[in-house]
Image (cartoon, rainbow over all chains, first blue to last red; front, side):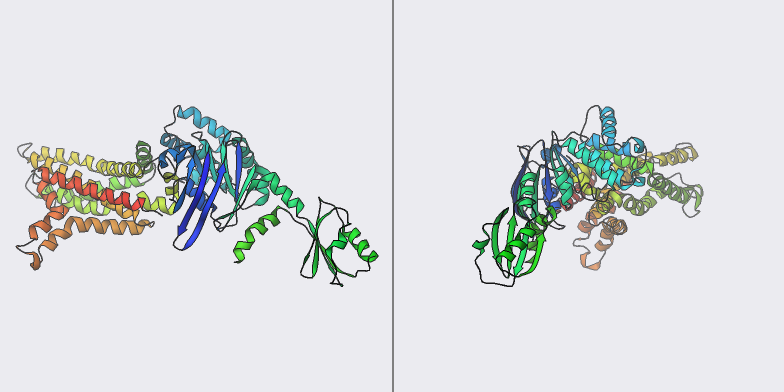
Length: 306
Length: 242
């Protein structure tokens, strides 16, 4: 159940902000929604919250369709928009009371006390929102998103612009919330997604480029380590390298031979010795240190260049 | 709807706006009624409140767009409109909440003028020698006029995210719908053909008619329809968001 996105598209004139996007998110799982700036993350989230209407396709939240029953969808969702718009002239408590009354929450006072406790707003609860620092404003944004105990949480870059301590606080709160709720969490920072999420959906130019668990992604990352070598001799078959230890794959790419390595082994010395033994002249050798950033870049770059 | 309503009312009275609107309205009306010798009741020799009812539309023309300009323009400029739209509220609920809050503020400004009525009533010779029927009618007229101006001002506020533009546009639209039609009707082209019809499109015609103490159902229906038309336009503008 939870959030099911089916062929969602949003066009602004001729530009396709989101193009035929499909993915699912489930309870008890934090879904990292990743992509470079302008990839369509925010647009997708706005469509899920029924703020903008999709051009094509649809999505359902807790079984309610975003096109036919937007009000019921909004009841299920707690949404923290990217720029976290708040009524600056209101007091923190006054604002939370306002949100609670929109959601028609029974026993408002107790719930607000709980939420203030959860989000660590205790010290700031009697201040005017406009006077709060960025980190506390973000907490107020989060507090208004979770006040009605929604089944689905949609957070658009909740950690942008926070300092390290605030970042860790907010992350642990999101992690805690993710235990029972469906959390969709967007970011353009890969490490953050790695630290928080169970699954990752990467989009670029409105298209889905990856939808896999964080472990699969990490394995892919490790499998991708490779050594590029250039020899003076050009005419030989790559099969002669088959005897090398810890090498999964050898292929020719232009002038270079690329050795894909198993795990984190360092095989540079072996390659050198092998070259000497076979009378090959080594011109250049370098290691490709693949990390999550690289995967992200690799996945999202191809379409940018076009 | 009520959550929005109370939030807006709170916003008016926790800032200067509410007090300023009420103060400016009462001071300007008070000056015309009691102080300026051209229009003062004291120099007029008749126990009447005509001054109030002829000046009030003019004061409303500036004051109401000033109240309504922030309704949506500010929400759009600050992005809080996204907050409202992603809550379980219909567009109509948001608009009605804001409409009634703005309207309540204007009525709060209007209510203390009942003191003026009491004063004029006491000053009459003999006491109470004034046309109460016409005054009740005029108050009903002002009530609906305020309702229409608030609806017009709110439409202006949805068209832009700049409050100054919303104010100027709102004031212009109020002016246009209140007075312009009576002047257009006087243009030679329309004389003896459409003049009465054109006059009837304007608010002024119906306001003057009610002010005479003649509360005609047609005028009431006119006001209710004009409020409805502008609120409906406001809904359509807001729902047209991409």
